[in-house]
Structures are given as structure tokens and as C-alpha cells.
Length: 305
Image (cartoon, rainbow, N blue to C red; front, side, top):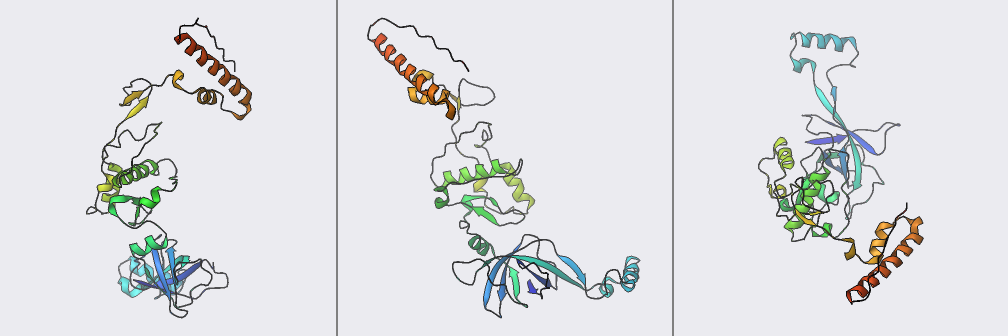
């Protein structure tokens, strides 16, 4: 499949190029393409911004009476479709990068009329979007509306990552796949799960499996969506709602400065925090004296908010 760039108009959006394909509408919205400008010997990386417009070369304008009459005959099966319709498919492509040189750069000169675009390969998409290399063991998902995988590597895990999205968009599944990939690389992973979202991380990610099956990717390696070996812990006492080893830490185990910072954390409570820390240190000293056989001191603490 190739797309050929057509002339602009004076009001054209210069971040886009427009073009035709003539055989089949093989490009889809969000597909990535490589644009080759043979006139200037430059290459570009772009993305189709929407579905194709279907134009007819065998008729006048869509509101012309001759066109209307011809399609009436087609609807009544008096004409074969090939008599009335000779389609050409119109696309718009957003130019993302100039890839003439390495490394790629922003687009400062647009391709010229007659440039040819083809569908980009997966390795090209990963390269020009600056994504980690493809490795099915470390796959965490795929680019929306495509079959292009998104992967992580060891270098990725040494940087901070943000997984964001609206409710139900797949953040939890993506994080679970991210965790799985990290474990596959030999990292230890600690999850602070307050909701909880990951109580089933030791079972396969069925949502990801359904996604692959729905896209016809039944022959793909599914190592990245299998369950992981996990130990579960919970704060406080045992709970039937969440199985795990309970962890309880009494306040006496905290350093006085840490406990004071927890109790009085707002910035405007600095004086209260310092006073409370002093009291805790005095109390700790008295407790130590009591353990040494000295007379015990009774303390009463009032927290007035």
C-alpha cells in the first residue's frame, strides 16, 4: 500500500499532509507511516489522523443531479457498482518527525507534492517513538488502536514512570504487567496497595488475555500476563477481606521525631511538633529509668485539636 501526497491549498493545515490511495482503503486512523520525499531526498515519520474519505472519480459532485440519478439506479440494482463507482481514498497524515538523519528532528520543512507514504513497520514505530526495544517477555501493553506492543527494559526501570488514565482505562492492568516485567528481569518489587488493586497479581491477567484474543493475536507469547509469585502483608490485624500476614507496629517502636512528624505533619504545626517530640523524648527517658528500678512516673497526654 502506498499513499501519494497531493497539492496543498492556501488554507491547508501545515502540520498535516494530504494524499490519495487508489486500490483499497488499507490505512486506518492512528496508523503510522513513513513518508519518502524523492524531490528533496528527505524522509518523515507520521500518523494517520482519521478514517479515510471516500471520493468518486466516476461522477460529478455528490449533490449533482447526474450523480444522484446514477446512485438511484445503483440502489435499484439497475447498474453494477463498477459502472457508478470508481473510488479514490483521501487521508490526512500528521507529520511527527523528520527522520532523514539520525537522530530524528522536528519537522522544519514539509515534504513536497508527489511524496510517497507507506505503512511503518513495528521496529520503525518503536524506534521513532523512542520506545524500548520489542521483547515479548517484557511487554506491558500496546499502543491504542494498534497491534504495536509497548515494552520495558532495564533502563526504563531506573527512571521514574507515570501510568495515568481515566477510570477503567487500564492503569491497574498496565501496572501489573510492569511489575511482572520487572520480576522477569530479576528486580524485587514492593507494592503499597491501599485499595487494594493487586490482591490477584499471583493469578494470570485475564483482561490482557481477552484483549489479545479480541485482536486476533492468539499466537502471541503470553508470558507477560501470567501470574507472579507474591507474598502478601497487611497493616493491622488479620482480615477476611484481604488475606495476608498482618503487620502491627506499636507507637513505642517509632523514633520520637518520626512519631511527632506523623502526628503534627501540617507546616503550620511546627511548634506543636517540636513540643510533642520533646515530651516523647522525656517519656522515653522515664521509661528507661523505670526499667533500671527507679520510681515510675505516670504520664497523661491530651491531644486537643
